[in-house]
Image (spheres, protein in one colour):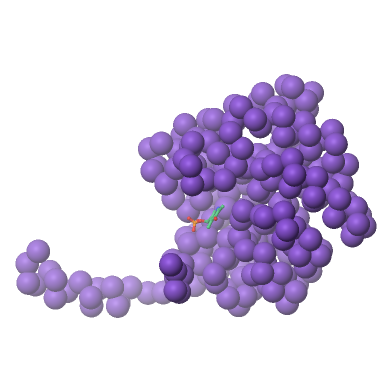
Length: 253
Ligand SMILES: *Cc1c(COP(=O)(O)O)cnc(C)c1O
């Protein structure tokens, strides 16, 4: 790098305008619309993921008409939901330990969808708590699938998806078996395989359970790959940093 280039870099970064959350949402909506035009997939919901960001950022998006929001941590979603308008449709997208299920369901009565069911134990626990709390409508849940085979990822193996989906739809009357979710690999070029795998899981489970495939959701696609995911049929994309800016994790160990 030349001395001149390195001298210019910090100034260029400082001069970059800060994009507002409202502009971030509008820009993502425009990109969704374009991907939807290209692919003919007209039914993708945008879940704006506000984890680690203050409630004010979420409300900025709310003020421009956005209603679907996602959070990863029980304590954070409970705090935000308690102070936010009731017509927000909250999605829980983080790993959920069974012993925190009650705090989540009690703390977020307007929880719209829980995207990360990955054991029968968790499904049974959620089903029981929904009953105890007297929820009026079944809770929509997605089965999280580990489509990349990485040890670090939560989710059931593709071969176990149908059994868990069958358990939810057959034995958990307080849950609605609403579809499938995956995170996939960070490496963009590997993702099509992960997304194809999720679609295949849905096809098999729908056939086995006698359900209409088009009524089961595919939650796939994040900031780096949501357009590709829409083109592959995603019905639910989860976008955080492209809307709210990069996340900073203080004291991350
Ligand atoms: C954080 C997170 C997202 C959003 O990620 P971005 O890359 O910031 O868009 C989506 N899905 C899950 C499960 C997440 O944890």
